[in-house]
Length: 633
Image (tube, rainbow, N blue to C red; front, side, top):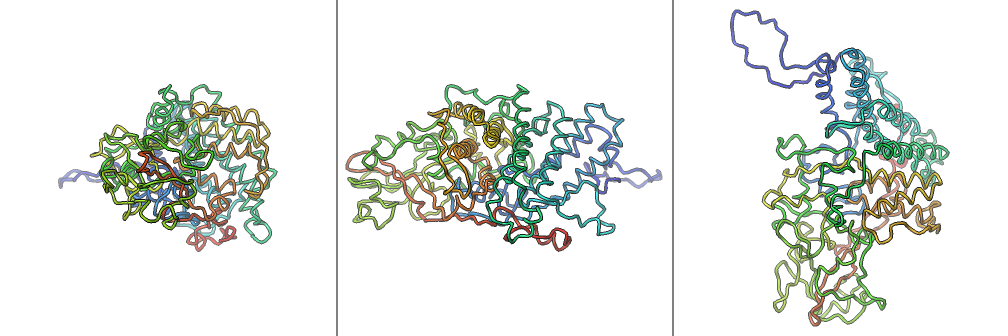
């Protein structure tokens, strides 16, 4: 089949009127022969496909997808906000998705896979195999974006003719097991055929192995834990295998994930980033800014010099840093919760008697914090773009009691009455002393540029950008799609699920040593946590899961992890984020930090509908074979 859509790479010039024969082939239009018949043409064909891969990066907008028209707002509607990593004033959990259905892109890949063998003689054998393997990687990635949302989906491998008989277009859903197995087979082909090296922004065999490591871990946990959701009794999609996998298949997928990690580990090509040792906080921050990091397996490039509407620039610095001191436009929108902070090595803010610990300076709170945490977040006293973060809630004239006396920051708490707690607007003073910090938490303003939680995001922020450049669509940091740190975490989880406890902890130890954690190897703890999560799980496995939270914070993994573990409805069940509030105690000249509720008392709620998004109704209207619909939809 010939390519139905042609790629125009230049505008035809004006053809002057003359007596010359005008029956010429048009120039500047690339057909199948031009694209598939040489390596450069294939590269151009793949470029568009890479740009549409379902990578949840800086521009991913949880309400409207991967290439939304208002993608500058992605910082407000992140997966981090949905999962509770971020706290802001915008939309919280989205149980419904946005109808992702990229079969047009899958068709493009299928066309290449089907037609490229016709041009085999045009290519060196190694090049031919690599390009064909790369196509299978791309197809697997698109199917992954579908499978993690819907479970079993139509597996289309042929190039369909949308103008022909409609019946062949109405492909039925495959089972969820067959869907994930299809992704495995595509990636196995990619690993076996792709080159070990590739240019920046394109995948190699190790990127395929990293995707295998991730996807098969998803499949394994879905197989093992979906049975506890209780779908099978009255849900046709579950009964017919479209939502859920036979639990006896879980180890098959865990083994695939583990084996893929071994392909990467045994290559000897990649290593954990340590360039900035002994400063482990700076080292962790720079891991996400150094395109040459030996930890990077696959990155997505951005370039602020390209035209804006290409989506190849982003606004992360403008949306995560306070304006006007550290960004030019809009300013900070989202902030890490205290719940996340406490997942790391975190200093005590109360003494054994329950009284707030006194600090001489606000920045003294950072003493004893885990370096990885300091590399992920900015706190009081940190500097960025020539300014120092100032994050103070208010003043207590005196504070003699327990931390709990503040009653989560309630205005009705006795210790907060009669003017003893002083709150104010930005820049207000009380007897010459600052009431609220320049970057939060002041009164009479919403969540923009007014830190809600006591810390700002540092991961992925470019410290070398001047404030006047930190504007909308003016950031060019790359996004790390796959890195060795994630692969080690995937292997640790797969190992533990396969009964390889010691090896699982070996991988966790590698991660925690680089993080600068006080305890690098967790204690063996088999405590039963089934009452919390609704199925058998011990504290060892929970520690491994928590390590993912710590290491991968703000990298858009948390939402998908909670979904695949089948715990999101329990973790985000009337969840109210905790926040870190700094106060100056006037009569002592000291600072205290209080653990309070987020001041607007917002709650996060995910329901069981979150585990499977509904097949888009518009697609069902065109293809009734997509039924039965997913559970609870």
